Amino acid sequence: MASFLLYTGYFFAVYLALIPLFYMLSAVVPKAAFVARTLTAYIALLASTLFGVYASVFMRLAGYGHSAQWATGRSFKYLMAFFTGIEFVLEDPHHVLDTSRPAVFVGNHQTELDVLMLGSIFPTHCSMTAKSSLRRTPFLGWFMSLSGTIFIDRQNSKDARQAMSGAADEIRKRKQSVYLFPEGTRSYAKEPMLLPFKKGAFHLAVQAQVPIVPMVVANYSHVLWIKGFKFNAGVIPVKVLDPIPTKGLTPADVDELTRTVRELMLKELVTLTERARRGNKIAATPFPAHKAANGVAKVTGVDVKVAA
Image 1: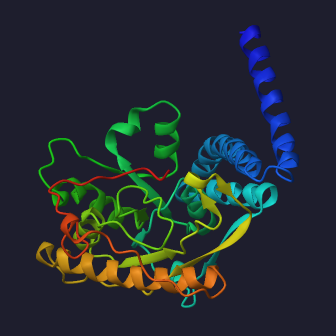
Image 2: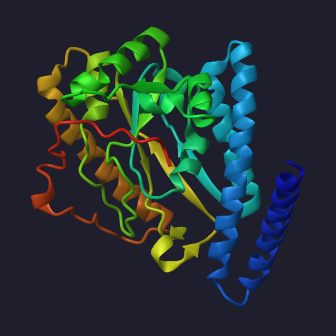
């Protein structure tokens, strides 16, 4: 045990020493900034995760367990802003985050930096979704359970509606909002685009009869472009769009709902990205038409991912 602690101490000492070294090198070798900020991001994420475990326990005991993911996310936001100069700035002109509960929030998914985006904008009384098997994972599963994660049972599910039924009940019962990435994976897009949307989030909103709230993040390849080893300080706008009600909708309406939300988000994505890039006119990058019809993924199951 003593040896383990000793080697762990050596590892973190070297790790922390490398961060300022690479920041200094970035004045001569610009790509060194990519390494410096990446190392900083991982150590900030680790610190926030450890904080989150303790925060989940104490906040649950105090009756505020539903806000543990919000508190953990905010800790990551402030650490990253201080040490890397990267900040997501929220625009919520109609105060939707304060007035729409419960709701299903959906957003575009670009890179691993979206963990910071979630930490910056996550409303209280909101959580991520995760497949139910993660509930039994040591540490991660404990944190998820304590912090109010909505678990989705995908075992033996034949379609998205069946997989989402239990989660819909939880949303109504606990009045807990959830956040999902309907693209299902990161796009890593250099220009504004959206992958085809999976329908799970929209089935969930219809089953729970709660509104869909689209949240759009400007394309931020000018801040983080992994293929080009670019990782700069910068401000990235995030905008909350008006809620889209689902009262009275049925599963037959899900395809049209998915298509409508995607079109609204794509239009706003172009506008936000132009502003983030100081007014440079851009156009959305089209997704190949043969891959999906009207931007709706043709799948029978549901692919639910933990934010990463």
